[in-house]
Length: 239
Length: 207
Image 1 (tube, rainbow over the protein chains, first blue to last red):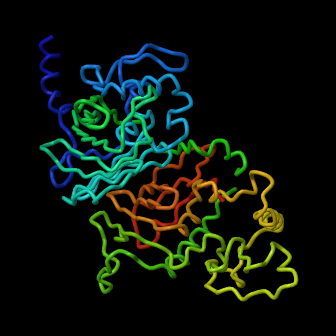
Image 2: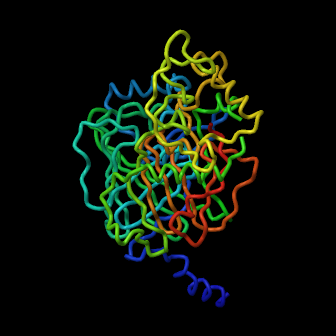
Image 3: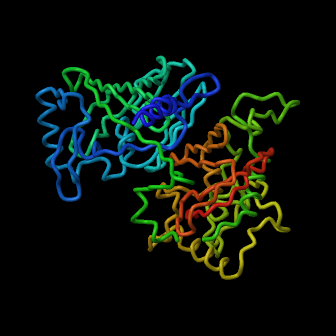
């Protein structure tokens, strides 16, 4: 027993180490994926046909809607099959692209972090060179991202969204005033703690947070493929 | 459709010859500069001088290399054929600058072209008109491309259609042959040389 405990003590630092780039920053490079049901519903939800049950990723399990917005969310939920932008293959926005259920690849260097997603060739450029957001108003599907390091955490500030995306399939929505601050923190080599603060004074009464773990793909030769969701009805014609 | 890597190299080199960098001008005397991992530095925003998405043989011509007023395969009825502006063919290794189709493939190309302007079936629709990914060659002729270089990787991020390509610079195997991809699957050699990483093997679905 003593030997086992001693071994665990000796190897613990190895598991706790995180990879770093040549300039000493945590190295987030690699292929990652969220393994949860947040894309179905950010909050606690029971199973439905084709949609497994899942636990909330919302801190406190409450999304602080304004009264009119809560009514709209309920209407969205009732009509989600027709209204969910994902079903139309629109770009899913931030943070939904992170937990949409498909893998993504992070490329990191000191001035620019690039994230490429298997879903619909979505991509994001997170400028970490100190440049500010471009002057708005701009309404982009994926917003504009600027990052900086807070210790070992990559903090990404996102603005300039449109109001066409949802947070999940349950009808949770936002306006074009959405402001998302993401925090990527390596827990160890193969896990990232992903936390996002969501703020939208037009829709919510206060900022709120989601929190989840991202898992590194370690399978041999794993790579991004394509999920061109708007092309499935057509690809039969282009063999 | 099986991808012709020789054609790809030809087109890319042709595009590079007529293209120009939008990015800040590098020190030409020192070109190509190299990244620490040996990659030649080609990062930046690039665009072809003439998009030429509709015609490889004369990039200034329209779809199917037709001249204004000309109908596919017949020429404009009762009307003199206007002289189109001319640009060099991007097919640089055939005597006539034409695509060296096999006879059956030329027939198919002409068939698709003859139905291009009044499509009656889905397969007559140009994938570009549907905003589908255009494949690794044609995508270079549609809007800007942002080339990014990371250790071990080159990334092409295309403004047209919001698509990208990831080119790993190592010898990892391609995915299985049954995995068909609009933008193909690309590999560069482990030891990068000025242009050799731009000659990947691909399995594209796009036209």
